[in-house]
Length: 116
Length: 110
Image 1 (tube, chains in turn orange, brown):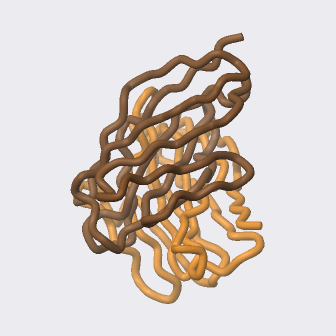
Image 2 (image 1 turned 180 degrees about the vertical axis):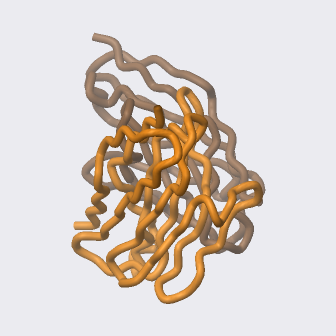
């Protein structure tokens, strides 16, 4: 149990385009999901907290108009990178918090975004 | 903030126990300690979590000191597939957000 999926696993796009990444909790419901970004040889950096039915909470320095988050159901959160630029190229990882399991976060496999 | 510190790297021989330490001296009394590991280019994999008591599951054991200021993750019989970066983490001061440090890069050698 506690499986989280992400789609796509890898995406290459042109500069200026938008990319949507989906995060799904497959066998549990998640009121809260989280989005992280990881650059090469660095640790995970939290970008935002996604709450079902309400606005996401962004960490300091993360542009909410650039990284749009929607958490429309208890099993799905999406991250849209708008007007992507090469510096947005990174490994994006989501996690879903399993309430009732000591609030353990379970992570998706990640999405590798490359902006040309 | 519940910050954690871990050694940058460790080596272990295949078949031997790997003991990975973590200091979390600022953790609050009701905050769990979670351990994850990340293999290159994959999302972090949940290993185990604990609050006060020692815990064991099919992957590992977690030993938490009585004062809760540190813990040790034990992989009883390390295999080559256990080579990964291991993260010890805890919620950030009263919130549900996890803060990740640099973790410990464990290399299991044949």
